[in-house]
Length: 206
Ligand SMILES: [Fe+2]
Ligand SMILES: [Fe+2]
Picture 1 (cartoon, protein in one colour):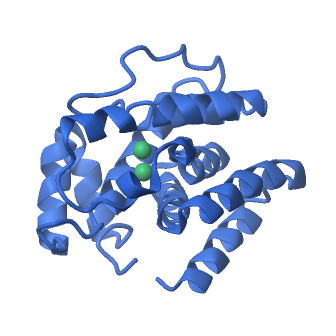
Picture 2 (picture 1 turned 180 degrees about the vertical axis):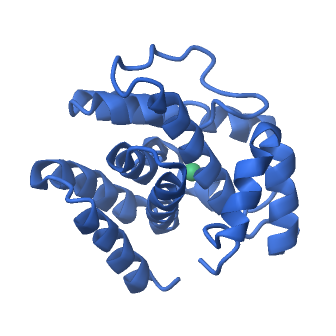
Picture 3 (picture 1 turned 135 degrees about the vertical axis):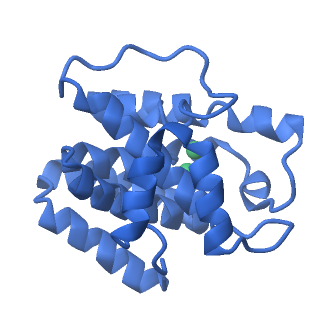
């Protein structure tokens, strides 16, 4: 998706959700920082924001937390070197270590801005995978009843899906390969993943 189209679509989602102006200033502020630092990461965050909302509409989850959490999930990468963010080869153990703090860094920043639920979602976006991190998670905020955990899970799913489209040293994966990876990676969510492909929420050109 071209940069302008993506920006337009992301803004349209924010408008459709009627994001309050003060919240949008915070979200936009950190998105602008990320854009200035590393545009592909900001674009990934916008795509994940849009996709998480689409998944949330299908799964009937609260959409604003999904939009904020997904759009800001990688804001902690401001502290990761650009060289590592640009790397397309296999990550070394050292690289993996350097990436491990970004959910917690994003959590701290977001908590400082008073967005408690969003911070809680951000810190969990790598917590549903093998070798999950961070090892210690802060308590879930006492809101949103049962849907907080589900929202965190959907953001992780949207993130995994979008990241699977990154070019890597082996080239680009096909949509079929990505679907197979997603089904293997999210073994307990195969019904939902298959339904999202059937609905065209996953699997359509980004
Ligand atoms: Fe991440
Ligand atoms: Fe991500």
